[in-house]
Length: 549
Image (cartoon, rainbow, N blue to C red; front, side):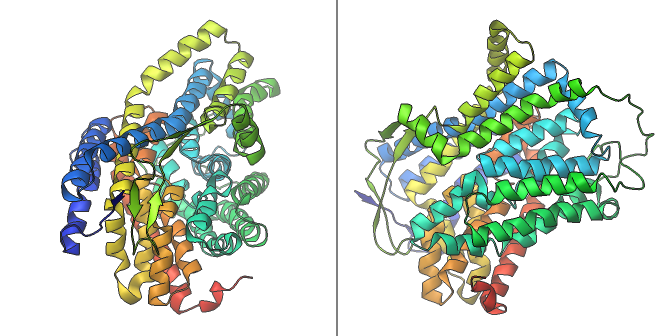
C-alpha cells in the first residue's frame, strides 16, 4: 500500500510548482511552442511520470500502470467515439449529402450566426446529454466544417458551446458520480447545480455568437439567441430541481431546438449573414445572398437520415436499460494488478484514508462509440455503400485519426498518473487554502479538474471529497461547494487538451491545436471567473439560493 503525499517538499509553494510541471509542458508545448499535439502529449506524459516517481515517491511500476490504465481509457471510450463519428462524417461527405444538409439548414435560417446557434448550442447539448465524452464536439465541429465554417471557427465555437450542458451530460453521470464520492444527497446536488447553471445557459449563447462575429453583429440577432438560451435554461432549472439529473440536457435541448426553429419561422434578421468570417470575432465581408433552388423533400430526408439515426442510437446507448442489457451479453472488468487497491488517498483530500480502485471496464458492446458505429453502418448501407467500400472507408478514417488517437491516449495517461500520484490534489489544495475566498477559488478547483482530466465526471470524483471536507472546515454549505466543483468545471471543458484534439480531428485541422487553445483560453477563464463570482454571491450575499425550491 502506497499512501499519497501532497506536500513532498514540506513547502506548499514548491510542491505546487513541481506538480504543475506536466500541465505547463503539455499546454505550453501546444499553445506557445506550437509542437504537434501528439508530441506535446508524449512530453507531458514523460514529465508526469518523472514528477510522480522522483518528486512524489510513487513506485515506478505503479506510475507505469497508471499511465497504461489512462491510455486504455483514452482509446475506449473516448477515442472509439471520435473514430466512429469521423467515419460517419466521411461517408456522408463523399456521397455529397453534406452539401444537401447545408442547404436544408438554410431553410431554418441562412444566417450563419443562427446556424451556429442551432447546431453548436442546441444540437450539441442534446448529444452532451445523451452521450458526453467528446461526442457533441466531434459531431457539431464536423457539421460546422461541412457547412463552410473555417476550421478555427468550427473547432473553437463548438468548444465554447459545449459548456453549460456538461454538468448534466451522459444522462447525469457527473452529478451521480459527485453524489457517490461526497455522500451528499443526489437530488440536493442536482438542484443546486440547476440553480447555478441556468444563468450561464442564457449567457453562453450570447457569448458564442459574440465570439464568432463580435458584439454589434451579435446584437442584431439577440431575439433568437435569447429564445434558445431561455428555452434551455428554464427546463434545465425545472428538471434538475423537480426530477433529477438524468434527463436535464435531453429535455432542455429538445425544448431549445423546437423553440428556436418555431421562432425562426416568424422572425429573421433584417440583414442575414450568409458568409463565414475568416476568423472568429471578425465581421465577414458583405456578399450577395446566394440563390439556390428548392431541394426535393426526398433529398432532404436522405441527407438528414444518417444524423437522425445517429441521434437515435446515441440516445438509446445512453439509457441505463440498454447499457445493462448489452453489458449482460458481454463486458469485462479488468483489475489493474499492482495498482488496484494499492494507492491510498489521504486527508485532507478525503475525510479518512481511502483506497483507490483501478479497474478497467472493457464494455465494448455498451460503449457509446459502438452505438455510433452501428448507426454509421446502417447509414452507410442506406447511402448505397457496399460492405467492401465501408471497410475501405473505415481503414481510411483510422489512418486519418491515427495521431489523434495517440494524442488522446497520452493525455489520458497524464491525467491518470496525476490522479494516482496525487499531483492533481496538490494543485487543488493550493486553491483550497484561500480562507474566505474559498467559494471563488473552490469553483476554480472544478475548472482546473476538468482542464486536467477532460471530464466533469473525473473532476467530481477527483475533487468532490476535497470540496466537502474543506467547505465544512471553513463553514460553507458543503452542497454549495460540491456543486460549484461541477458548475465551475464545465468552463474548463473547452480548454482540456482532449477536447481540443477531438475538435481538431473533427475539422481535419490536426496540428493546429495551439491556435484553438489560444482562441478559447480567454473565454474559458472569463466564464469560470463568472461562475466563481456567482458561487461567492450564493455563499455570502444570497444565502436563500442554497434552499431547495
